[in-house]
Length: 294
Image (cartoon, rainbow, N blue to C red):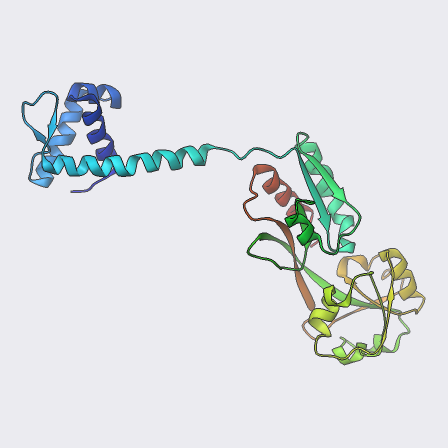
């Protein structure tokens, strides 16, 4: 015989009502249909489920075994179904920041679309770049972080958005512009223009120059537009996402080169605290993927 939920619900209904007629009414079936179902089970089992002509209905030991199983399993299923139907309460606000300085040009349309679709959730964008944003999120100062840096993964959930490629930006007349791609040793003594972030938090140093002793110069520049102007003027080399190249490339003011023969590629993630899951968060994630650079 096959024990299924329908059988367990029938057995429990008979026990709770004390009669076939009462069980049939509770299950919204006819008494004859209910009796037929139980007779089929008894035929498969080769044993009776009930003591005949008992009122209220009494179970045989086989029926008692099925009733115990029903009392154990059905409440757990009911509880799980209630939880699945419950929607986590929407937050009043979502506080988002970015650990990538160059993300704002594609991020802002997604933020605008979310505010239009979810006016009941106040989405605030922290434009003051927080270089320890994950830690701030865990401390309750933020709710979401865009980052390429996976860390504290036991406490943080990372949802991938897109693959980001970092390129070296150079003036056309720079000696390294003659190369097809740059090796780590090419940048060992270079003048590098970068955001004001410690080297240990920059992908260039963490993944490309990690085995290379850097003896060049680092110049901090706060804005990408300023950095690109300095590159065009021959003031140094910048390492930036591929999408920032236009319109400088079209004007012939800069050239770009991959970092390594395979390029330096990182995944951009939307990070949130583990356990934070609601429809607004997933809606924002979907919008970010739709507006992500290709």
